[in-house]
Image 1 (tube, one colour):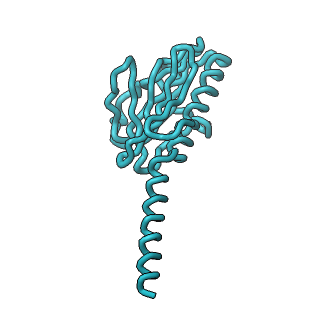
Image 2: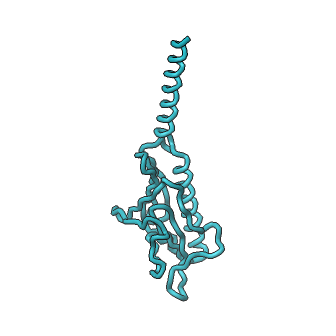
Image 3: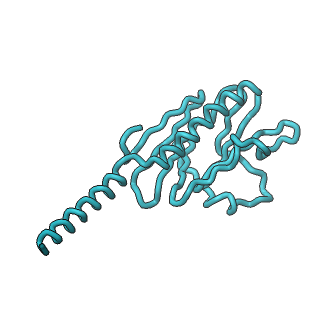
Length: 169
């Protein structure tokens, strides 16, 4: 009877390890959902920018991103008020972002609370009313996991998502 209990315990341990390793090697759904959300928002805003002849800005921190609208009357970037599509997005811990512009990594603020509120915001990425977009790559990753999803955007506004360390999406 004791031998049967030991064997059952060993099988349970192996099953638990197998389930945990499959979770870390498989696709991370939360990361995938966030990168797909941003890709969709960029697509919608790129179209809206052309239709309205309006420039939109995108500002990243390590833990989220925020949209801005350029006001040509005051020559400043303004946070959109009352637009649920353009609300600030803060990622759940331990999700993080990295940003590359012109093949150089941009040092991002820890979060939006760490930013100087007296300083005029300068978005790192601009979606122009002409249909052009600042080319960039934003990586979505977790600290403890080597996998990441990368959203790449070209000058003409086309986007693509690649995965490194995960199964392809």
